[in-house]
Length: 313
Image 1 (tube, rainbow, N blue to C red):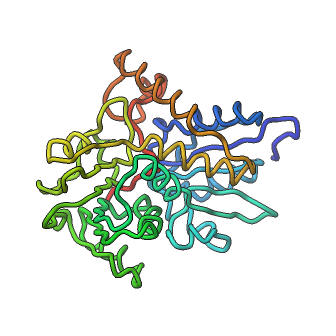
Image 2 (image 1 turned 180 degrees about the vertical axis):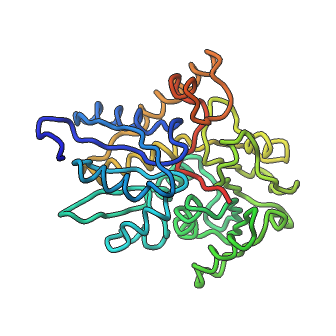
């Protein structure tokens, strides 16, 4: 059944867990700001139901889907015949739409991350970067990070083989290395450490060794929260110069998805300010802890979430 011509176009975020997602709020604010009424929902799925949930959504007239943990590589496979250059490089998709009966895919994660890092005046050109995690989130940001001109980038993961497999997919990237979490250390420390795992959703930090940070280094968690995430707290205790969560990355990558679907780029500043205020209000009201999809947190607007579906593994 197709959507009525008089109904607002329908969009959604699909993932598992997905009850914590702030994407519906972000896109509602974008729609109001740009004068484009829309419906934006949360779609839970499992590995077994992902494909048919996506197909049913678009068969019913859906305008576009954002894809979060753990389905970004599944989404890449669904849209592999019509991928943007960014998605082709990433091997992961976070934005889907259907045109002329065919599914298209893009990855806006790296755009969102690098935009926020530049806003933070993070060390990029000539920097030494540690990327923690090897799932869809890490895949989505790897090429944009390499394109910044960093001097070296090491991927570490709980399962070292997954990090090595990801690095092997970029054979021409001579600045790239990979290993397990125990291989995260570096003489002199790292200028920028990025957590692309979903550890903060479980109210935990990755099991990283101490002594990772160069003086004035930035620790960046792709998760976001009303209060510092476990990774951010771990980083500051280990000597990071500063720590930042990924809420603005979420807003920036969402703006890129909105542009793909609607052809207009919203102003992210007011939306970010509104979300920060809402997170603070939730925290003040006693809604704390990680986003686990419980009814109470979903009703209140969870205080911890993922900027882009950071993957486990």
